[in-house]
Amino acid sequence: MRLVIQRVKSASVKVDDEVVGKIGKGYMVLIGIGENDTEKEADYLVRKLLRLRVFEDGNGRMNLSIQDIEGEVLLIPNFTLYGDTSHNNRPSFARAMNGEKAEELFNYFTRKCGEHIPVETGEFGGFMDINLRNYGPVTIIMEKEFDD
Image (tube, rainbow, N blue to C red; front, side, top):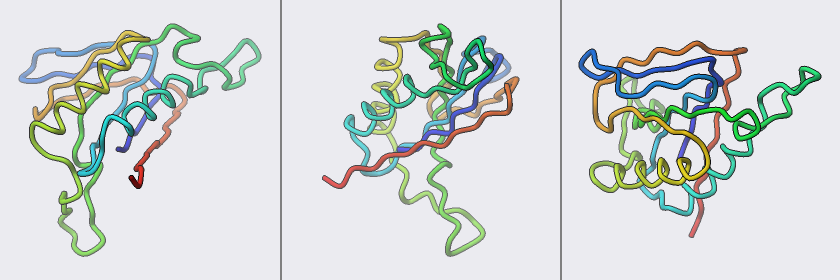
């Protein structure tokens, strides 16, 4: 499972010109789900995401988590994070999980985050128009694959 986390002042996502998710200060997170990912990877990355300290404290140091600032998260499913261009110029997405199983794991990740902070999402499998006001910029990549 791969996350691309961007610290934002605000972010929104539209599908067919209709806003389906919108947040203020927090994270816009692209989520790629790999073919072998399970709830174990999701649980690990939810914990890491919630504890990530990239918001400034009173001294201007990145020392606060999203929970500390009472921020929000916009989660965007994005299978292209598993695009492999090592053999061709056209990406292969063979390592991305597909179909219902990926959607179930995305929804699981969303529910787990939502137990702790406000969460909005994009549309799984939809063509999305994403708008964000990056703050910093601060962009962090997280990934985890267990070898069970």
